[in-house]
Length: 121
Image (tube, rainbow, N blue to C red):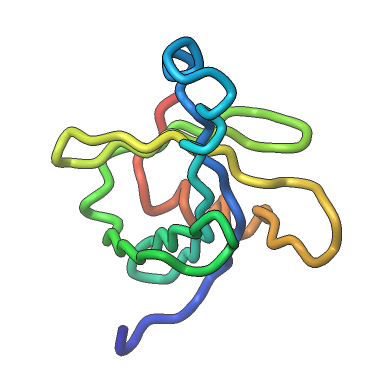
């Protein structure tokens, strides 16, 4: 987007639904979604990755389209729940620690999200 600049980026996973495990068994793991999330000055880009780690789709949400965010605590992953103005939710776990080449959620990126979206405790 013109006039937009990158603040930070990180890898996140959307865990599989437990009820799906009881229906299709171990194949429920295939329903996990991987995201490469880029936070900019104007909003958040959710780049969905396919099973091979290639970009499958891209969704951009301006900060005024996101109603609230709930940020949990964790040692290796940080759970985050984004609630949008249209009533939809997305629950992800952002990577905090890992090997050097994995994009991790840093403090500056999290502060930028907290400043621009209402935080629910």
